[in-house]
Amino acid sequence: MQKYTLDNLQSSIPILPSRLTSRYNKYLLSDNWRRKRVKVLRRDGFRCTVCNEGNLLEIHHLSYDHVFVEKLSEVCTLCSKHHRMVHRSGNGDVEKEDIADVA
Image 1 (cartoon, rainbow, N blue to C red):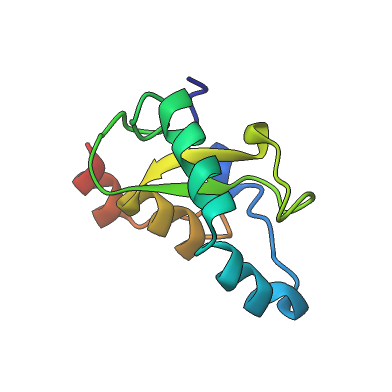
Image 2 (cartoon, rainbow, N blue to C red):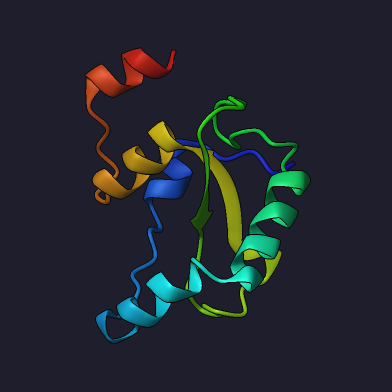
């Protein structure tokens, strides 16, 4: 399992072009995405790649270069807390309260 840090993930948050948002939301409900999601969860041992937590897991896109046909190397497993933190703080700044909660 590839390990990530918040700094590492926050330094390169991909941006999905707005023209793809509707299609992307439908894609996340597709059988194709669900199969890919399970592969990523298995690869990452059903653990967050930042904190190793095993609850409330989500898949994070490291890149949208191949959105809809992502390579498994372009996504990783994050707990919902770290997924929120990565997207909330695109400038790399993490609130001190959030860091305390993670520790």
